[in-house]
Amino acid sequence: MQVFKLTHGLRNPSSQSGVCPPYPKRRGVVGGPTKLLGLAWAGTNRSLRETRTGELKALQHSDGGWGQTPYLVSDAYATGQVLYALHELGQPASDPAIQRGIAFLLRTQAEDGTWHVTSRAMKIQPYFESGFPYGYDQWISQSGTAWAAMALAVTEAPPTAAALNAFLEKR
Image (cartoon, rainbow, N blue to C red; front, top):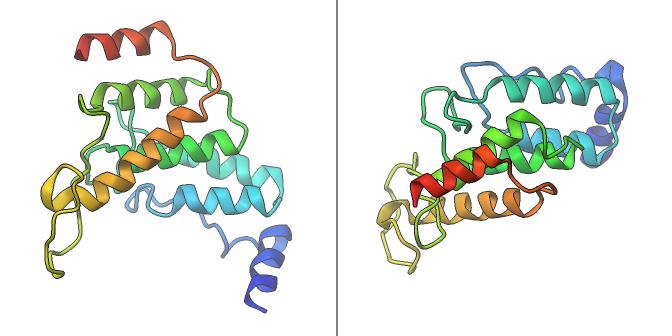
């Protein structure tokens, strides 16, 4: 029954206000990319997807990335999620927001190919080493690296010269 309610709400414009409300600036991208993916995969009306896509793009930071909240710096987790969602929604890889996001990911990638994402979680569980770098930040960094790699993998067009130059300058 819950699945029916959700898909009914996603497919019927008159009941969509509670399903994917506008992204409040104070929350940042938390949940935004996954809501957009749900809207796309459920085949909701195009105008709602376009509106929410524009709102998500507007949250892009000046460094080209996205932060999990407006109070946090850009990171690979949020940036990778947003870029993957934008791709799934049919945004072209040549879109300037996507190109800035790609440049951010290439510029912040570590030499070993991973990305460091700072954990926001309270340290309540016993710590153990998984073998992934970054100590207490290893779990969120592993997820951030996965999102960043997925985002780069689905980008159809090669990065612009500006993105490549930004990558090469870091090296």
